[in-house]
Length: 167
Image 1 (cartoon, rainbow, N blue to C red):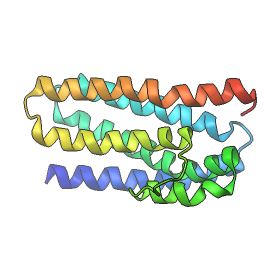
Image 2 (cartoon, helix red, strand yellow; image 1 turned 180 degrees about the vertical axis):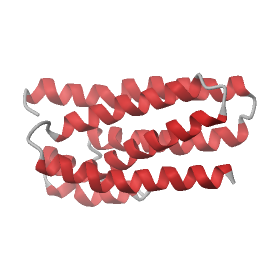
Image 3 (tube, rainbow, N blue to C red; image 1 turned 45 degrees about the vertical axis):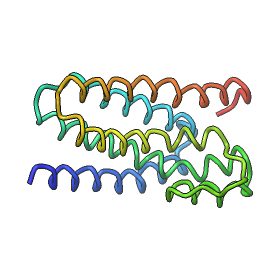
């Protein structure tokens, strides 16, 4: 029952975030799209950090929706950012990789990969939680995901900022 409720909440926040983040990023002049990606990555890293230090199931209902919201937001921002940075010729690659299939022989833009990385880490962490039932292994897996997320997720976006000097 708890897993079903958590899955429903995560899915609902992910769906809401896809609509909300895409709408706000397209209409707001406050912050450009890469800025939203950086905020989402930092928020997701905070949720994973909280999960790694968690001793109670209640934190799942705090962190799960946070992670779902961030994952949904990055999913919504990935195609327009890829088009902004690399043109429309990479769009089929973006959608095929978001579905979990890669087009063989096609170049893969690094920022697109880092947009999808948190989702892959979320899925792998859910898989790891099934196999690593001892608490210390579960905690270590979330700590490792947080470090990977911050390093591999933020560095390409900071590189884009330094390279282009525009957001």
